[in-house]
Amino acid sequence: MVTIPEVFQSRHAVAVDDASDDNDAVVPEVFRDGNDDLVPEVFQSRVAIAVDDASDGNDAVVPEVFKSPVTIFVDDASDGNDAVVPEVFQYRHAIAVDDVSDDNDAVVPEVFQYRHAIAVDDASNWNDAVVPEVFKSPVTILVDDASDGNDAVVLEVFQSRIAVSVDDASDGNDAVVPEIFQYRDDITVDDASDDNDAVVPEVFQSRDAIAVDDASDGNDAVVPEVFQSRVTIAVDDASDGNDAVVPEVFQYRHAVAVDDASDGNDAVVPEVFQSRVTITVDDASYGNDAVVLEVFQYRHAIAVDDASDDNDAVVPEVFQSRVALLLMMLVMGTLA
Image (cartoon, rainbow, N blue to C red):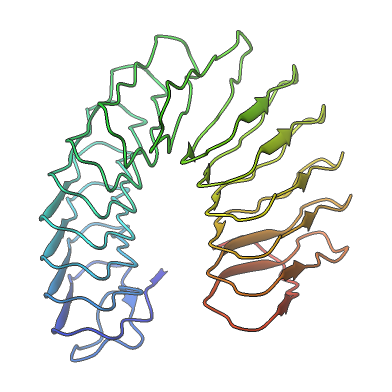
């Protein structure tokens, strides 16, 4: 079951048509509608949004479609595991997502602020491509998913001034290079000869050198979305088994230091951006560490203290606060 709340500040009617399938939605706070599918965070839209939920088992989820000047249409075909298209907003053209009839379909979230049409071709292989957050590009981006087993992931390639070509070679577990945009020089990603190779996404709009040191362990480092920084960002990947994940730290005015301790499953700190003060995240030595998602547009320091339980806190989407905030949530279970 999916939950899609927070449909607010819409200037036109929102129509959600939930077909007669078995696993339906839960709809809170959907204005001028019956009791249909879930569409979360569709707000500040200037045109109508139509979500057509076909009669298959596991239906589509389309959250955070807002501030769009044109109509957004999501067609969910009759296959088993359907497409997820969240956060499509601030668009200047229509968006068409065609979910082909293969088993594990494509995921295309966060495609916004585009000036040209976006075509995502999902070939007929088993594990298809993922192309989210392609926005603010002055040229058309075409992603061709070849016929190998485990295909490439190309996330958040936007605000690029030249064409982006991603060649997915014929090895078993291929490289992942997302969110490389607004660059002024060439970017070289060297994928070494180990089994599970490096992932270096979302390094963009940096004015100083960015050094990513991928040590010789089995599961290498993931450093996505470090962009629009005015100081040098150094990420040191220690020699433990499952290394650190530090995505979406951008638009910073002070240095960001992320210290990855020697525990097993390290910290995940994504989408901390547009902060005016220094943010320090200290990952202690317990088992399953904290997840702090989408803390942005803050005007004061943010301190996240992750207590010593096994499954630590999840604090998503805390933004636009004007006072200092101490977030401490102890949650048992999986991240929804």
